[in-house]
Amino acid sequence: MPEFQTSPGMRDILPPESARWRRFVDVFAQTVESAGYGQVMSPLLEDLGVFQRIGDATDVVSKEMYDFVDKGGRHIALRPELTASICRAFVQHRPLAPWKIWYSGSMFRYEKPQRGRYRQFDQVGIEVLGADDPNLDVEVIALGWEFYRALGLQQVKLVLNSLGEPDDRARYVQALQTYFEANLDALSAESRVTLQKNPLRVLDSKREQDAALVAGAPRIAQFYSEKAASHFEAVQAGLTTLGIPFTVEPKLVRGLDYYRHTTFEYQGGTLDSAQNALGGGGRYDGLVESLGGPATAGVGFAMGLDRTLLACDDEGVFPAPSAAVDVFVVDTTGGAEALRITAELRAAGLRADRAYENRSMKSQMKAADRSGAVFAVIVGSNELEAGSVVVRPLRAEPAGPDTASGQVAVPRTDLTSHLTKAMS
Ligand code: AMP
Image 1 (spheres, rainbow, N blue to C red):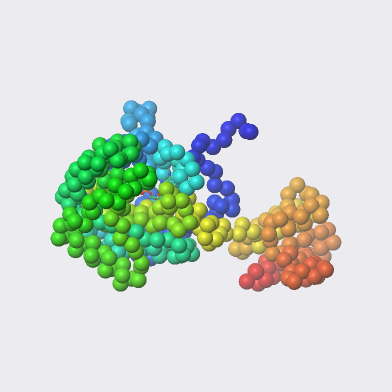
Image 2: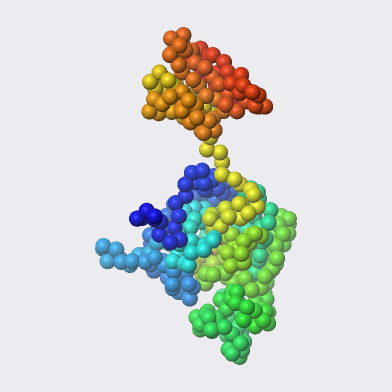
């Protein structure tokens, strides 16, 4: 074992997997930029207080933050999520509303690592600040849905709920508290602790002991105001218009405390139920205010890159792109010609690699095969004298007894145009 390895819950993403991560973000950017969302790049670190406003009844804030005092005596934290940072940025920069933005990057939570749950993980997400039109809830949800489609995922389920307005939510929390307290003996010890901090989160309990009690708990829908009910109906109607299937799940409260009205989750069909949330979000109309800004509506989602890629693996879609080059240059004359040729080919837009260290022809050809290149360009001393090079197809199909049969000598001056044509 080497002396140093990545810390628990943290991973190196190596090629070719890293290229897949980059493409993931590219596809996401294409999807949301087509709807007018612009990217915000914010710092990895924020004042601890920014995240404390999310609500300290959540594990994310109370237990899982990487926080420390810096050399200037500031108490800061590595971001555990990005919505709070985006709201902080909104208050700081006062952009025109509605502000439609997207982001991507690493988040940090000190969690117990397991498949689909890491301490450093990546998210992509969108937020819309400054408008409370239910059509925006629909747009946001639909963009996430389209993105999963663009990846090729077929087994994602959309689960939807509404937590109502703050007053509705408060009355509901009170009713839950009364209900669970009347049944305290039946509740698991962990949920009893949760009940003290946030009765809503008891509904999140995955413990078998709590299942019956949770199933019999009061439902949020009984507490909706007229406005909350009509907002939720409009969201459902919009999704139906767009042909996006969903299930209403009254127990869906989501991990963070700032949600009101719409909450939703995209659940993967192939992952364990504790890790099956590929992404989720909702409306958080009070968060900007709690960060010192004006009353501002907000809606958005974050989705986990790591976990969504696990779902892609399980469904056999969105594979890592090929890392193969187009052309591999084999030069047995010392390597100076390979230096010129690869530079020329790369300048012409071809992906080109070469062998180094002046190895034997055999060893260079082996490297050419390993590179996955479509063509080898072979430079020998005879060719060099004659002002030509040999172009050999490496993936001749069907593979006959002599796979080199398609090889041709090409004048050195025609090489780039010859290969450009052959590759197209
Ligand atoms: P949240 O910010 O908690 O609403 O999470 C949004 C999404 O981020 C989840 O659905 C996951 O896909 C992903 N996520 C959250 N925590 C982790 C983690 N510890 N490891 C990997 N992915 C995570």
